[in-house]
Amino acid sequence: MNKTFDFWMDVSPGDVDWAARILISHGSQGAVESASAKGKIRVLGSFPVGRLRKIQEALRQLFRAAVATGEIQELPVVGAAPTPEVDWRGILRFHHRPFELGGIYFRSPWVESRGGLEIVLEPGLAFGMGNHETTQLCLRALHGEFKASPYSIRRLFDVGTGSGILALFALRLWEQLEAVGCDVDADAIAAAREAAGENGLTQRLTLFQGRPASYPGRFDLVVANLQWRIFQVEMEALASKLDVGGLLLCSGLLLDQAERLEDLGRSRGLSFVGQVSGKEWCLLRFRCMERA
Ligand SMILES: C[S@@+](CC[C@H](N)C(=O)[O-])C[C@H]1O[C@@H](n2cnc3c(N)ncnc32)[C@H](O)[C@@H]1O
Image: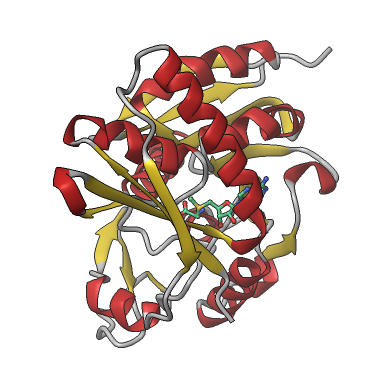
């Protein structure tokens, strides 16, 4: 059975960026463009089936507002259909490229080992093979933190763990670390479990399906590669999971969403300590300086 549906809108060429951003900010992991009829461009995203009605309603309201404010010229023609059955694993296998970061080699099982420290990940349907800019920003930030504090980080919480890549990388870096990973998606947790086993890190990684608030205790380091609309819901919980002095790394933000996240973090009592910008995405760092 299909687990996702495609939602598309046919827009004028000048509205393509707007349309892509709307899809991504509503939870699509990307936006695909193709030519459509009458000189329009089709911008398509994919969403979990359970969210179809909510997405359609949210977008309908947003379109009306965008036309009213002149942000776009006319209402886009939209459509939705179950995502066609595609061999995503095959496609991902084809596209995945191994890479190295901080002396650790990230590869898929069919790429030959080079010996030394590595993380082996089977490309599947969970997000997090490491090639996406949002994941790269997290991996680099974790490595930077390791170089700055090679011994003092003991507990890490990976929120929205996907394939488990961030937790696994952190466990490789910090030998004394214990990590917890959570994800709302059962498939992601299954993939992360498989990856933890494959990499011999099961003993040090606790995984559970759910949202961050449902796990007890606090952490030295919390990493969350989510999306702006999810941070709006989860920031309170993320802040509450930090020990005093603890660091929160937030990725998954488009460049123009950074300021809003900075304000959101401050409003939850966190100190903003910096931003790293990539080409399209950025990562923000917050610290918990005190607890009321
Ligand atoms: C962009 S992926 C990040 C995967 C991986 N951590 C990485 O950096 O490549 C975001 C993940 O967050 C999960 N997610 C979305 N909302 C969540 C929530 N409220 N709590 C926990 N996980 C969530 C999604 O299912 C998805 O697997």
